[in-house]
Image 1 (cartoon, rainbow, N blue to C red):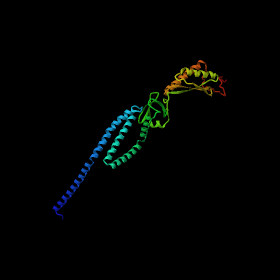
Image 2: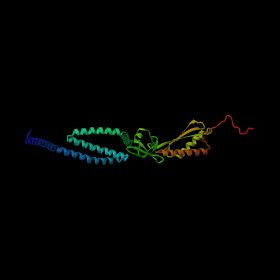
Image 3: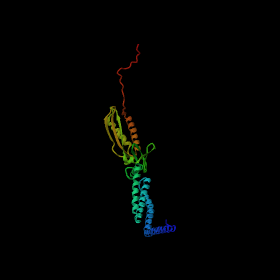
Image 4: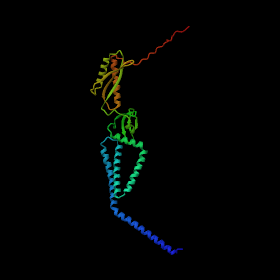
Length: 300
C-alpha cells in the first residue's frame, strides 16, 4: 500500500505538470495573438470599411436606378444585392488576412449546400423573381402599357418581384405571375403609336358595289383625319345573304379601349351613310317549308 504522504506528493507533481502545460499553452496563445494582432486589426478594419461602404453603395445604386423605369421593388433588390456582395468580399478578404482559409472553405461549402436547398424549396418563387427582374429591364413591356397576355387584357400598373398587375377595362385588377408573362404569349398594344382598325360588313346582292365602296371609304376619310393614310377596302366573299367586305384604316392608339371606341364609331357612321343611300345590310333569314300544310277548316 502506498503511503498517504506519497500519494499527496504524486498528486502535487501532476497538478504542477498540468499547470505548466496550461501556462505553456496560454503563452503560445498570447504569443500567437501578439504576432497576429496587426493582421487581426487589419481584418477588422477591412470588414468595417466594407460594411460602411456597402451602405454608401446601396444609396448610390438606388440614386442611379431612379433614372430608369424599373419598379421600386426591383431597384431596392438590386441595390441590396450589390451591397451584400460588397460585405461578402470584405469578409473573404478579412478571413484571408487572418489565414483562416479552412474556415472560409467551410463557409463557402455550407453556403453552397444551403443555397441549393433554398433554391429547390423556392424554385417557383425564384423563377417569378428573376422573371420580374427581366420584365423590369426589357423594353417590350413597361408601366402604362396596354397588354394582352394569358387571356387577360389591361393596363400594366405594377411589376414587382412576384407578379405583374394589370388593370382591366372594367377597373378590376388581375395579378399574373411573372413567369407566365415571360413564357407565355404577350401582345402589347402600346408598343406602336398607331393601330389598325379592321371592320367587316355585308351588303345586299341588289346593291351597287362601286357606290358601297365609295360611300364607305369617304365616310372613314371624313371622320378619321388624325392619320393621313389610304383606306383599304375590298370585298371578301359571296355570303349566304350578303356580299361581304372588309375595310381597314389607321388611328392613333396605344390601348385596346381606344381601338374599340374607333371601331364602334366607324360602325355607327357607316350604318348611317348606308341608310341615307338606301343600302341594305341584310341579316340571315330562315324559311320553313311544310310538306303537308295544315288546314284551318273544320272537318265535318
